[in-house]
Image (cartoon, rainbow, N blue to C red; front, side):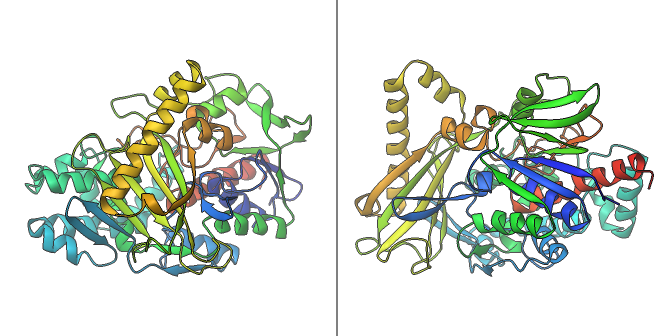
Length: 493
């Protein structure tokens, strides 16, 4: 089916690599062009100060039996180097500590009145996981997509009929239906979970996307041995084993096209690559810059829920003076203020004694908070001192919140690096430094893979269903299905 067809993938993020690996396994000749010297994008690892750090993504999700990463591994023959975490992460807010994992016992104990809500959430999530199995044709682009969705929906009856009533709701309206919207502590807990998984909070998050986002800890979290970057490395290896190529140091600077058909891609080093099909693992903003027009793709929605970047710290900590918590991942929320912007942080610690991660007696840590990118670029435009002042202020704010729950953490830091939205823009090529995908506010205003070109599709966390390993893996299957259709039509098969 794919003989003599050349597919170019721009960007070696997880979404692009997953789509490229699936197509390579089906016989396509795939070439991935990556600007950096390593794969992974926001889910990469990097070495600094003698330690290996997870750059952005730190929690492995979707590896549960039948989950998107489990299915992807089975289709590609990849045995993921993962082991289950006892607790996905621990939520801390003041004196409250909740272990989030397969059991919600601690949540039920702290918020017993929320039990009916969680029962409903579990039913919705089971249905949504089934619908997402093997890919999800949303938003539908043609009658075939609608027919596929109807078949899946019929299979899930009568439960699937319940989706209709939740599709237009916000998460907050869903909480209100259970008389939970007046419990400020519970709403803040839910908002903290939604922010890291849907990039928005309950007044704006869609109820169905919230249902599956809240299910991630219950579905299980996995530790990726050797760092999150191993996922990208194994996907890149799969492409190469099926005859494709992953080329590093190749920054795409131009897409060549004739009317609505892409002919090839040019890179900053003067190379040119002919293509029958192009998959762009880019944000719409970065893609629009590359094609030189905003008419080829719908740009991010700048509505009431703005998109986010991240401010991230990478401390190396001395474990002889500070014992990391048993739970590897902590979510810490301040008592008040807007979530994000240093008022909520996510902290991930490397495992003691894991080979190749940190020298004995040291621990590699990733600490991140959501931040809006515009103030950072404005500060930088006013000069280096203004930018450094903002960077130092955020560093202190994040470390203060971390130390409020982890006494002695500040004193244990032996070295410290920081990444701002400008850093994310530089290393991931994401215009404006936007990371984490789009705010999932509506099922009816989401971005699909199609562009204004007949043979060019988007992939990654900017298309439905958005961020996270399971999200981009599901989106990659959707893109691959569209590529198959073009091949059948264009190739006469």
